[in-house]
Image (cartoon, rainbow, N blue to C red):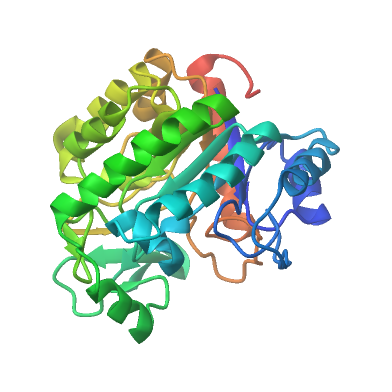
Length: 349
C-alpha cells in the first residue's frame, strides 16, 4: 500500500514539495469534459485534451521521480453531459467523445480515471469550527441553507427540468454508460471508478442520488463484473452513509477491497452519518482509522491512500491540490504515512 495526494495545478513548487514530503504518487485533476489542460488552469483551446497532452503531463511529473497513478474528474456535473446521465438524444455521441479521450488517457499511461455520478455535484449546508477556530464543512438534512458547491444557474435548473430525472431512468442510464464504456476502458488499459454521492441522501435539488448505500455499490459493480468497473473509494463519504453505522464502514471496506473494486482511497474522517455530520481532522472523527487501514490490508488491497477535504487552518496558504492548505494537508500526509508503516511494517512505496 502507498500514499498519494491530489493536485489541481502541477506547478514546480507542488511537485518539489511532493518529492520533499515523500508523496511519490500523484493523482491529478482534469480529464474528459474539462476545458483546461490536465493539472493546469490554462485553457487548452480545442475540443478536448489529447494523447499528447496527457503524455506531456505524465512525463513532466515523472521527471521529478514521481508517479502518475490516476485522474479525478467530474464530467457528469457539466450540463453538456446531462444527455448521458438522463438519456437525451446526444447520449451516444457524447459517450463516443468521452471514449475517445479515455482511450487516449490509457494509451498515455494514465492507469485510473475516477469520476462521480452527481449531476448537481456535492452539497453542503454550511460549516462549523473545530479546535482552534479551524473551519470545516457540514451537512444537516433538516437545514434551510442546503446548497451545491457548484453555482447551479437558473438556465441549468431549467435544463434539468426538461429531463426524466426519475430514479429508475437514472439507473437505466448509468447501466447503459457502464456497459458501453467498460469494454473500451479494458481495451485502453485504464480502470474507471465512481465516487459516492456526497452527502449520501436519496435526493437533492429534485435530482435523485443513486450511489449512497452499500446495496447501490453492489449493484454498480455487478453491472459489468470487471476490474475496470470499480470504485473511487471516498472513505469519508462511505462513512457518512447510514450503512456505515455500528461498524458497517469496516464491512464495506472489507467487501469491496476483497473483490478488487477499490481503485484508491480518499482517507478522511467525519463526525457521523446522515442526516447530520461534519468533516473532521483525519484523527478526530468517529471512524477508527487504524482499524480501517488494517481492514484494507487484511483484504489484500495494494493501492493508494490520499488525504482529502482537509480542514482550513487559520493563516494557512493555498495548496493547488484538493480541499485544504499546505499545513493541513501535510498534517494528514504525515498521519497517512505513519499509519501505513504501522499497519504494514514497511515504509510507504
